[in-house]
Length: 463
Length: 131
Image 1 (cartoon, chains in turn cyan, blue):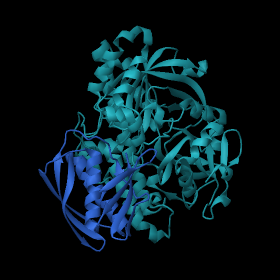
Image 2 (cartoon, rainbow over the protein chains, first blue to last red):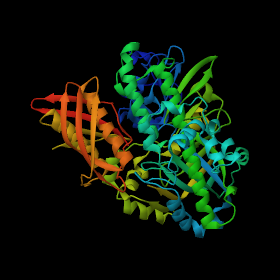
Image 3 (cartoon, chains in turn blue, orange):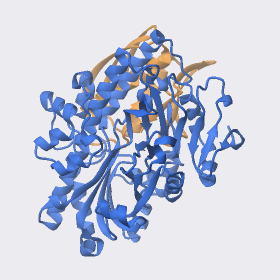
Image 4 (cartoon, rainbow over the protein chains, first blue to last red):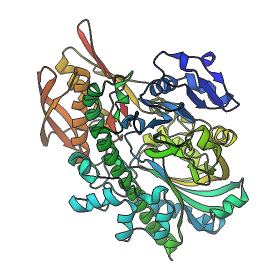
């Protein structure tokens, strides 16, 4: 594929017509500007998007957000809506890390007030929030305790004293999906997740201390309780090994079931079944249970962050309040033009009008808070991008960047780094990502969400 | 060469080689172990795996995912001791070394591009790991 296969719809929207490949049921659309379009042909992301356009019951377009990059099955940054009667559900369209998401916490202090203690805060966060692969957490969830987390999400954390009512109110779906069945999550998945609640894992997951650097929309910022130079804390992680195993289990189930439903696919990783089928409904309820685990995970991490805050500054850590918590690997039942659809977002967030949209940039650059804009409902099934989007493989990043040198460079910029792995740090070097400013400008310009504030990192904690 | 890491933007793509199908599966498990924790040695944990799939490619993915699950649950890195094939079924004996921490968070071995092939005398398989 090359640029001539793309039709320019507007400054921010490009279309791959249905005629590009005979098996496409709908066109594919890419949100990008001229600068980002150039990156689209460096990997297989557009071919993957075309594959999504072939799936049964897909509505309007297979969509990709400006942070699109190659995944497996669906591209990362992919959005697709399927009719709930004639359409499918696909675990590969949600991702292995079910309800991977981002949470933003606001603090009552400005950067200058705590500048001298940022290093100490970073160290306390590193020790309070377990990170790294294989590092277990404080809780051992078995039997009824695990099932309660899977059924109730943040409500379970509230009952256990790890959340406030205010926390719950500021989570997408109040941090709990009710159509969840813990019995449909395998024992293996539960075993993988039993000691992982309250842990961030590794890869691109992090806890970051930030300062509000630029305000684009003063009124919207005020309504979110954000002001210039304020300290915020961002968390990025998901359902850990539990969600990964659940996806593995159900992709296997669906691969066996597909012939029964007459489904054949250009890529087995797109494995899917009709949404209304028994296998589809089982996955749906298991996925919702895993999403609840992920919300409970980010909530328990918030409790740990409050512990680190108290250790560093004393006082009442409940003054740390949520701005919002948004999922970016999830399927949801929604209605557009009077039709019920199951919207798959893989590396994409909801962007409903007025809803906070959180877009973390690459390590050491900037993150953004936006609010969903009305046009998103017409253009993108109420969706926006989820991050900056990779452009360089982890292997290459490790070859061209030395973790220890990167750490020195970031610290010279005033960013405290606490990382359990220098190789892991190198993998996440800013050079490996797209320019977050360009990505956010597309989201803003296309009318999917409006910029509210920009956040700059002052401390990064990762595995 | 037992395996080679290839380029992939977000995840990890690799190509595995073996003179026999048994060797291909063993080398794929070794690649997974090396990615999880380079140099992990020891055989204190013993496990058995039984897998059945619709194709040889799916069998390889399912086999590696079973090892991965045991690995994450027991915090260990496994190597294959023996393998027995019967069509698209296999049983394996594996042994593992306990580790404190993994180098890389392998979430899953995906079916994307998974393809076991025989080129002349060599079996090859491409795999994409979600990391």
